[in-house]
Image 1 (spheres, rainbow, N blue to C red):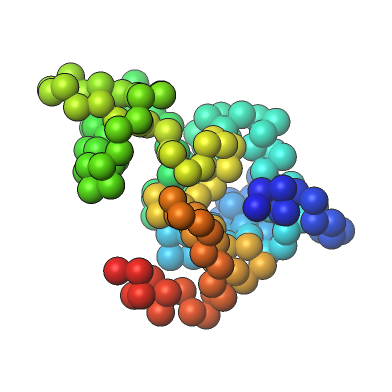
Image 2: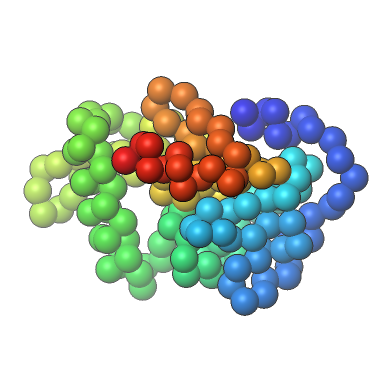
Length: 169
């Protein structure tokens, strides 16, 4: 699906230095109810390339981290954010236990016990892409919500998101 977005061609160009009111990343990308909404496939491509060029951690720390209502699938933490990191690990651990994950790659072993779990996502392995997804692996592009699951990708029209989420829960 990333390839699908990257190969789409349109003429608008993404500007990335314009954050206003903590809901817009730029003129083509806004945060809507905890999900990044990108107006066009070309805007997605440009954003992805910008992240790729700067590096996912740098881009996250410069731009995405500023959004208080966004919980990234792959956040980055600095040394002063120990409590946020521990909260992320606890949430990730709980989610992984509910799915019975037993992965070994990129694992973190909690100091308080012998539980080991994957910091990186099992479904989305591209950190450049994962920083744009919320913790439920969701993104909206051209009015379509994409939700990545272990068993496939759901695509739902933006107007039907609430109905879709109700169905999943």
